[in-house]
Image 1 (cartoon, rainbow, N blue to C red):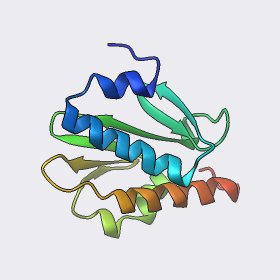
Image 2: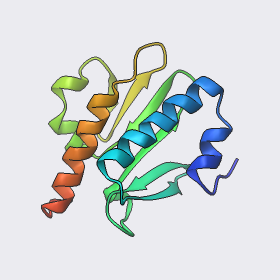
Image 3: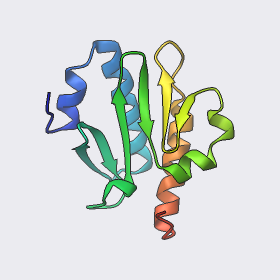
Length: 123
């Protein structure tokens, strides 16, 4: 299915997942209230820089057993110690649905990436 908005993406998910996705969205927007929302690669993406490309976006997605969170490889590296309990890749982390979602950590990760982008470090 193809989505045009984050609202469309969220509303087709099962209700418990809708709540998690909306809370992640709210956390991101609380840190970056002026961020642009879009769908990129078929999933929710929030660009921390107006009109920013993929490397300025925080993305998240619902999967069968986890929420995928895609902040950026530099963010993943910075929070490596705090992410040890989760399955990770270079630029993503999987938050299992059978455990509490670490919303405060997500907020700190978004703030880190926002600060990094503001300082001109976009690698």
